[in-house]
Length: 387
Image (cartoon, one colour):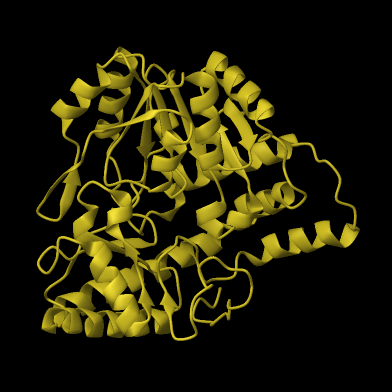
């Protein structure tokens, strides 16, 4: 069993997360402070030991590992001829927008939403259309009337679905996904499903891969998965597109080739295969550890920081904290807490929608650091109120 309590010093390692002041505790960006699956490290060491770093092909073994993983973990085995390697989820979204839609088209998203979507849409000359999620009783839901109206706009040619949803941690039900599928098909809208957090459903919960729906509903979709979040392998630059429609898949692969996103780095293939074939037990232990951290957060906030409340997240190692009782500017609050206590959280303003009333905290870290972070959060909130 992995010792997730083991502290790893990541300072001075070119870590985006830990490039902070000595007194600061970073609990913002979505990467974990845990060492990855031991067999993944062994696979990478073997690749490096060869000392030759030439071009690589993508063997069938890679696609077999991906398909087998989804069969065992999510009761869905995608067909091998649906699968395409790429060097990342967000880069693939950009490539899809460039090659399967036109400059000036609308891309529908559901705010609050993963902040990288905003840049990949606008940087590629597209327009953001927001069908904002409804929020009531600490839960987010789809505004179906608004979604349907905006999908009918002929200028809206694609929709990015975050499944499970980041930053809220919400898992979309099968009926929700089927309804979205029908609406996008009726309106000839390409559905791009970012499922990078899909493996990180909490114990007793399970996300539903969009591509697992009836094939009559998935013919206008591209689902994107990766070992990146699951195994803390962001630097591996490995992802897989699941595309049931052969014509769309061919256009996708042509675009990825043009954009230089189809060729793996020397560590990507064997590292991914090791993760997908050897990482089951590690992941199950990880999810329980993160779930326990979630319970700690919920209990601590309820008892010690009643001015805040935590949205019940069913997936991801990220928690969404409601601070609307004390501010409508979570960016200001997050900066104040960082300045006063050194706790570095993600301001919900970055995710737009009603994110100005929320902060996001990363719970994929050692229990002792979570406890430290909660103490700092309490201090920061109390000082903010007393100003």
